[in-house]
Length: 272
Ligand code: ADE
Image 1: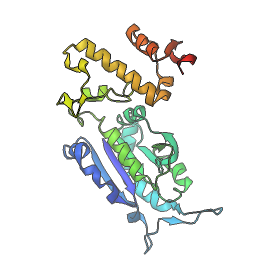
Image 2: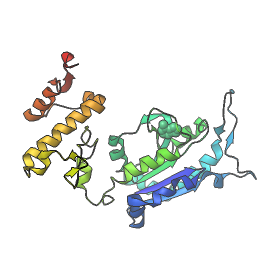
Image 3: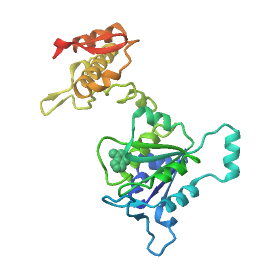
Image 4: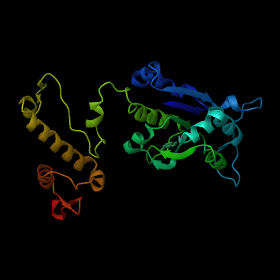
């Protein structure tokens, strides 16, 4: 996978040289290039922003440096033509913004399949909207939000997204099984985990985990997933597809006050 990031603060992305993503870059599993937007300005002050048309607070990012920067990461015309005949899609341009679609694990899986991702980090009040219109002719453009809160710019959101997407690229995480069992991979939160010692400061590891009974352990973990999700993220249960839920799981949900109605989990009104 190839990743390009355009930002006025390239240093912000330095941590992506560390840990699993850093190792994946070293191993050639993904390439990640960070480009300074100011390198694509032509004036002495390397200006990237200006006042908004129509008035209002703050500054808006000028379109031309963005077009120059984005053009510089596009594959050459000939290569692009060949990719299109081969049925390949255009690079995906991800524009982090609180006004974007919510970033989810499902989106991370989808983006991990792409050949080429480009991230455009906006600052100030945002990027001149025409850059997005212009980009739609060259990229598959996706405004994406990390969550319903406002950051100072896209850089922190890009770090989170690159980590979430990059770790799903085959070979980046050594033990692929750990990707299957983690939170959100099946629409539920992960079960709690414990390590030695079994007794620590008067807190004990749940006995079932010491029993060696793998069936019992699996059932306990599954129940913990349901309980945690019901307690911390009941919104996830509203989306949960319960059509193929086995009897034991339905039983566990019933204990938590949920019934399966038309393939969906419904909280019993009296469950409080
Ligand atoms: N830029 C500013 N706020 C953001 C958010 N919540 N998500 C993604 N990018 C942002």
